[in-house]
Structure formats: C-alpha cells, structure tokens
Image (cartoon, rainbow, N blue to C red; front, side, top):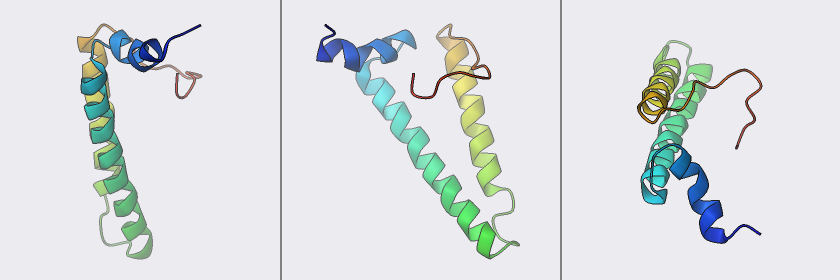
Amino acid sequence: MKTTHNLMTRHPASVGETYAEHAGSAFGFAWRLQLAAIAALVHAVLPFACEKTASTLVKGLYQRMLVNRGRHGATEPTVGTRLGG
C-alpha cells in the first residue's frame, strides 16, 4: 500500500522537484491559466480587446513546460498522454 508521503512526492520527484517546488510551479501555471481564461472571456464579449493575450499566455506556459521537462530529462508529452498522470 502506498503511503501518503509517496503519493504526494512521487510525481514531483519524477520531474526533479520537491513537493514545495512542484506546488509553486503548479500554482504559477494555474494563475496564468486563469488570466488566459479571463482574457478569452473579455475577447469573447469585446473582440477588439485581448486579441492575442490568451494564446500568448498559453504558448508561454507550453514553452516553460518544455524547458523544465528538458532540464529534468523528461520527454515531451505525446498524443494520448493521460491527463493527471
């Protein structure tokens, strides 16, 4: 049976981070995704506003993820990669 500690640290360790480092990174991603969502909503109502804001934020997050994966020896996600795992 897996311990709670193992469940909480296995994935962060697999990407070369501590639990706290991984939590900070995940919160940063979540914050930027929220900003992108708000920009997309504003753009939906006011098409002249935030024309590239959401896509720019998402592209930046993707590039950041690729750099971090490369730094920790992980591979690029592939089609069919299971979410959350």
